[in-house]
Image (cartoon, rainbow, N blue to C red; front, top):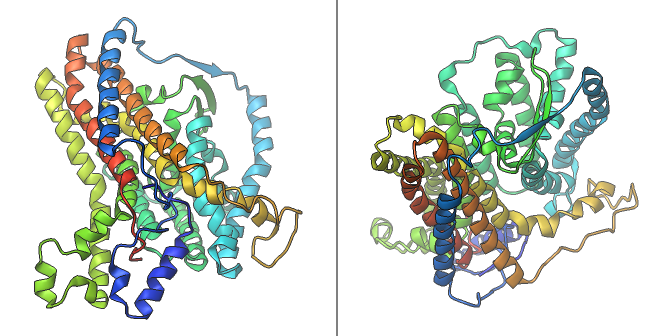
Amino acid sequence: MLRRPAHRRMAMDTVRTCCTNGLPLALWLLPGNALAHGFSALYNPPVPVWMYGWAAALTLVVSFLIAGVFLTRSRAPKPPASWTLPMTGTMVNGLRRGLAPLRLVAVLVLALCIATGYFGSRDPARNFGMTFFWVIFVLLFPYLTALIGNFYAVLNPWRTLADAVNRVWRGYANGRVRYPAWLGDWPALALYLGFIAFELFGTGRPVPLGHFLAGYTVLNLCGIGLLGRRVWFRHCEFFSVMLRLIALLAPLDYRRGEGNEPASLRLRWPFAGLLTERPRDLSSLTFALALLSTTAFDGLRATQWWVTLFWGDPTGWLTQWLGVAPVNALGVLRPWYLAWESLWLLASPFLYLGAYLVAIALARGLTRSPRTLRELSLDFGYSLLPIAIVYHLTHYTGLLLSHGLKIISLLSDPFGRKWDLFGTAHLFRAPILPDYSVVWHTQVGLIVFGHVVSVVVAHRIALQHFPSRRTAMLSQLPMLVLMIAFTVSGLWILAQPLTAMLMR
């Protein structure tokens, strides 16, 4: 069953109406337009889903064998080929002057998103901030980053605001407190999980978004003043950390100059960044796995299977405790359900980390590698990033297609006041709804493609750390099993019917 994009407000209104009327039916499983992440109209794949799973698993096995045969140590270059594009001081200064208006626009857009959150239309579909932030920034920016590199490092509005404050308050961006090395990227991970919780469990309304953006702006400015600009954007500001990881997939590698380091721009093969970069520590590895686990959890929690797991009370414990079926105790159980979901969300990166470490431990045992479990886990940590980006694509492209082009009309009427500032208020308001069979097979193809890329990347990394091709292939057998499990579970989630009962 695929899902047609529909705004989250539709699902919320359904639940709110049912709860107001006191109908236990609100807790039952209603296949329909639940999340704005996919397609709700029923679509039956031409063959059973288990056949897609077997075909995908076979594809991964064949890809693994092909990589093992054709990628040898002599043919696997130590560093992937890359070409540094010359950037003289004059070019850098000219580029900075050219980017200055774009950075100003980014700040103005941030301010507009905050303003429309507080003073714009309360209808999320007619609110500029809702569409720009959730659809253009949260969804489209990662895809563009995977294609053209980390342009967010240049346009980051919070960095621009910090630079402006630093011009007035000398030394502000240098920080006041030395950042403990042991903290690593844990602050960014905590903020990222908090953001995902806000996205999944919030009301999906403009005013809370205004609160979030205003509060996050204050947090960034305070954090920079405390820890310094360089440390904050490297370890704490989760959008910077997330998009920097996704940029490893891109053929362009832009490094912003910091301190005495000059800016640089390199052209490289797609996905080559995954071979030259590795997580610095366990916090960086866990953050990378969180990009995968939170997307999978978002898809899973919208399925009938997931909701039944709690409200269907398969163990009978809730019924015994309450004296009635859980579906008749909404008021009592709703906080418990939200806590239950929040617990699984927070645990999801560590569950994925556990599964990943088991695979690495098995690989270490099979090869009798002298490298420690920590070193091996960091060596292969970023090989799973292609899977994370294709999961993101398959789960959220529907929302991008249905609401992305609306930003053109909202530019002329950002506050929902029936303005037409630029003459675009009536353009591209209809959603793009491709044929369901096209969507389904595209999703399947993307999932398989992402896993195949991860298999090849992991094998190339193995060739760099193991003495022979045979040992390298042996080391990848547990990882192959893990990736097959990820593939089959991803296809299973996509094929599940959805529920309109989302407790937010």
